[in-house]
Length: 390
Image 1 (cartoon, helix red, strand yellow):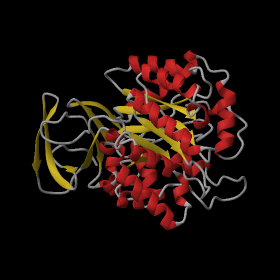
Image 2: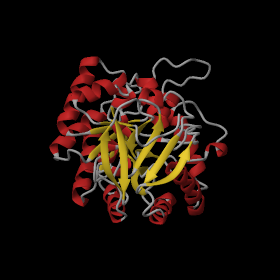
Image 3: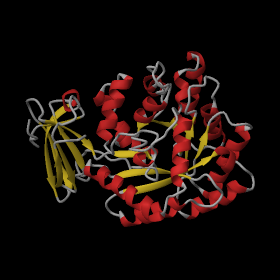
């Protein structure tokens, strides 16, 4: 099926799309089935460009999340600025080829001093100005960032670099006090927060609840994004429901990462996984929590495959979470941009003509197969036509 701009599905309506001067000039209702679905150019709020394309250098990886952490830390000992920059630039180029306009990359920071990747990715962000918005969010162990002596030093460096403050939270000792210190640092420097939280299958993991409580206490609604929250999938239903309701009231948003969580959670060699670790997306949204999707890891010990393609992330999430595609497009576009503190893209008359078109009469048909024709339009101009999205 070829893409015809006179019959485009926008929000379930078939319309004719007219562009002029780099903007959407008209959206006119029209009869007949659509030839393509349209969405704003996508955004990915959760990536790891510092780790990407390292899988071939990590031949021995123990099962599960902590095995992947061990493998990447061993590889990171040999990282140079040039190495990080080259691998990350390859990832950004791939992301742009799939229509991405903005991304947030987490950067491992496991010692008091800034890692080599922090500055390398700052250079990359500068070099991609005007083509890709690249945000850097630090990923520091909570015990380090929550330390009264070391935490403020790290926070100051992150603030000076225009970054997002974040850490890894999972069943830490003295968890509440450490998380509160992180919130105070974010408030001191006016930074957004992004947490890797409860990335495991312990029903006792409640870091998410603590972050939600601190968000409410420090009035940071809309400025706190959590990632993973796998434990919500195994906590007692009433307990999880209370946590989700509180998150909605506090204004905490959540990124679900289908590739990495499906790959790492309940991983035991020679045994099929029973528990997949995906946070309950339907229930979160029903409670009023903004849920977004991210590709997370690409070709590294956390996920050895993958690609920088938000549409593929959406396709997998729909399979794993029984989602209706048309209802979740915002999770890789409008909602994802808001979670990053960016202007929310829209398809409306007068808006920038920046959109992704996928051949199909509706979203079900458009996502049926990974080789469907796509057209990327930036400022009203065709940038690329991708027939192989894989």
